[in-house]
Length: 113
Image (cartoon, rainbow, N blue to C red; front, side):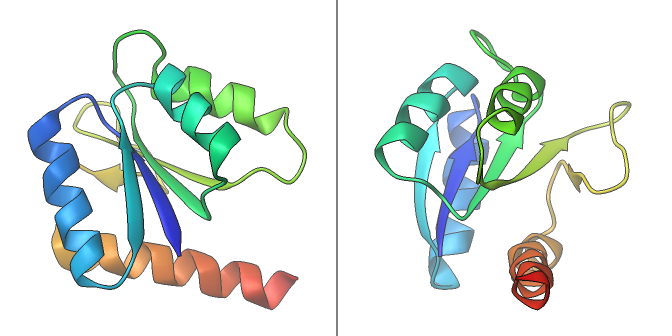
């Protein structure tokens, strides 16, 4: 499964990428929503894990753009308090919870389609 990580913190992006790669996921990193959108046009990820607050284009803006595209990818936002809501990954992320999330999401989609 190809996962796109959208995160402006190099340290956080690398930690998440390394953890996902250890579990067999193919990954790419974009430093903001604009770069992510460019990468999505080249190769469509099965899942996007995005920070919320970033320069150029934030996670919410990217999500709004992608919702307008038919057959778009699954999108998860992650952030720290006070912006957490249900369904978001929480920062700092816990490896065991983060790894379970892509597996749970893809299982749910497989059961639908």
